[in-house]
Image (cartoon, rainbow, N blue to C red; front, side, top):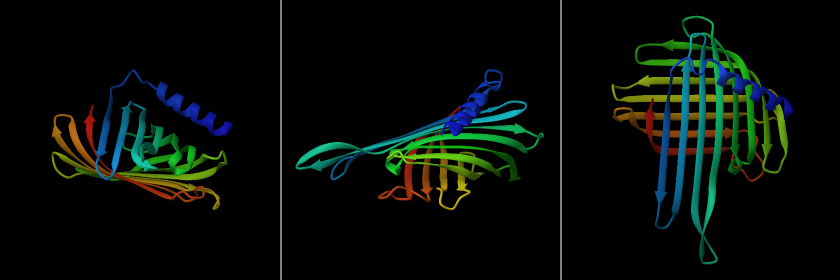
Length: 246
């Protein structure tokens, strides 16, 4: 635990300090709210902040995701509000450029709290190589791969940690002047077969509404191969949200 926290602290702090004020940044803010009434009363909030800083030698990417959902249930004739989903995720990745194209060495760190998936804390740290498989005027596919380390703590305080191999893919396709398709995939495959392998997928389409505002539809999948008893291995989220680009 101390080891992985130290690595995460050093990597995330280092990325935050690398020429932060010297170069312009780009990014996106996403907010989605869903409310239902009638037979089922629920309120859901999804938010995401993604920031990229492209300097001469480094490309730094920072991301924060949150998901919150509450619903009203009837208990002995009395309606009560209960939280049914609560997830917090943060990550940072620094790519040190090896040439003027897309080859780079990367360092990555992440933290996630998803107690309704059985985990109060999931940390990961990885280093490796990043490059582009192909690129054109309207599409590209990037990847990064390398070894790393993970730390998981479930809601009962049980701890699991060990080695991983991290692989991530980023595919983007411009469908038209106002529409873009994006597919993000990542897996942190455990070196030991008895340890947890965590995989994520985000499929989305964004269409420009006006200026920097877009409407985004997305489908997210999170899969953990080893989970506490009574917990599903796969969580999915379908959402419609407003996207602001800057």
